[in-house]
Amino acid sequence: MEKKYRFNDQFENWEIKSKKVLDEMNGTLFLIDVNTGEPVEATIIFLYSTLNYSGYYCRGIARIGDDIGTLFVPTSGAYGASCRLYFDPDPALSDPTTYNAKIEGIVRDLDDDCRYSDDTTHTSGPKDSEKMKLFVNQYHAMQRRNHNPDIPYTEHLYGVASVLQTIAENCKEIPEKELNILIQAALGHDLLEDTAIQENRIRWEINEEVLQLIKELTNPNDDAHLDEYMKKLASDSEEARLIKYADLIENTSSFCYSLHEPNIESPIQRAKDFYIPILTETTEVLAETSFEKYPKTAEALRLTLKVYKNLLFSRIELLESE
Image (cartoon, rainbow, N blue to C red; front, side, top):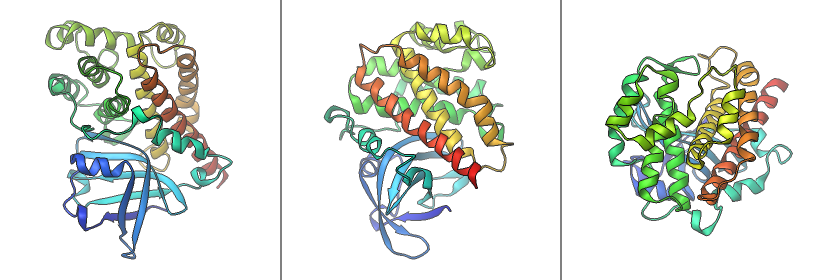
């Protein structure tokens, strides 16, 4: 059952773009139960912020009391600037037989070098990614997410970029210039695969490095024919494979949250028949590759994906047993 919380007086005029609030949310967050008015503490296990048509929002996993569940934090637009946290307790996460509590600590604090730093602003994005955002908004404008008419496909693209930026900035391995290129490629990773944009437009108006990463991530066939793509992925650059990990994290978290959505036809069956086979095969391919340039970033991405993969399997099992 979904529960609602609001921020305490300290965050009465909360904006998700505030670095101070994001820093606070990486540890313990002090909240007020909307129904009872009682104060509660939330421990953030994993959190990333992104931007869609309705404004900035956060997704993640959190612990409130004895419950572990998925977290959704809308801020503006269609959801209203109501400063509310929507928390969905999930027995599958709280059950020690289906959720490894050690992963919680690993994801929150992988290493002293991977903690959220004081100078990190997770929602800002590189300044010179504005042209790529225009491309993404223009060319993906009519596409929708997971067959849901209410969710634009661009939500996925901004989410992938946000996951990659958040984890990469925490691990502090990737130089700013290289990370800028990766984030632009993450935003545009589906342009060649799913839109009519020409390669030369990306080459001339963005740059060659971003184009080459997008080409590495492009499946020349459809999702029913993955053999060629998997072979290509195994030999892709380390940078392209980091983006692929972020892509899988965003996709897997979205499937976790969409299992209850009424606007999606047969979401559990779609996850089992369509997405999980792709997730399993892609994860296995990535696990066989090495990350010599950015090992901490790759490990952080891998562990985060593991959390959401376990969550997806557990939630499906729980829903099917009801």
